[in-house]
Image 1 (cartoon, rainbow, N blue to C red):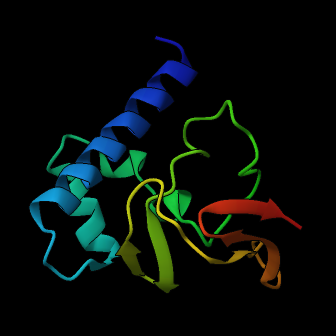
Image 2 (image 1 turned 135 degrees about the horizontal axis):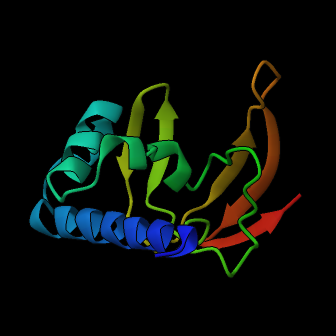
Amino acid sequence: MTAKEKKDKIVNAVREAFDEYREAHKDSDMIKTTSELVEIAKAKGIAPKDFQPSDYCYNRLNGGMDFTDKDDLLIQTRLFEYLERGKYQILGMNYPYTGDVWHKPKGGKEEKVGEWKDGKYKKL
């Protein structure tokens, strides 16, 4: 299995885990801590080392990522809204998210790098 195939397999498992979680807990609070999200993923066989919630946020962009890259399954998988350090809201795939996208380089200042409007992303 290539590195890309392995990554895509993990991303598909993450998608499935949180789609199932949202479906099973429709009326529940969808605000979760990092630890709670890791536990949801772990329950579906996803190793904690393979799951970083910030990689799946609508409003956070980790270094080297570009939401306009249509060929990267991870980049096209948005599931959460980052609320504050260690706290996220589960929104799910294809959510009509509206809000700014931020990137904070290691040791650097947080900067706005894009925005979502009704589920459509625009890079600045």
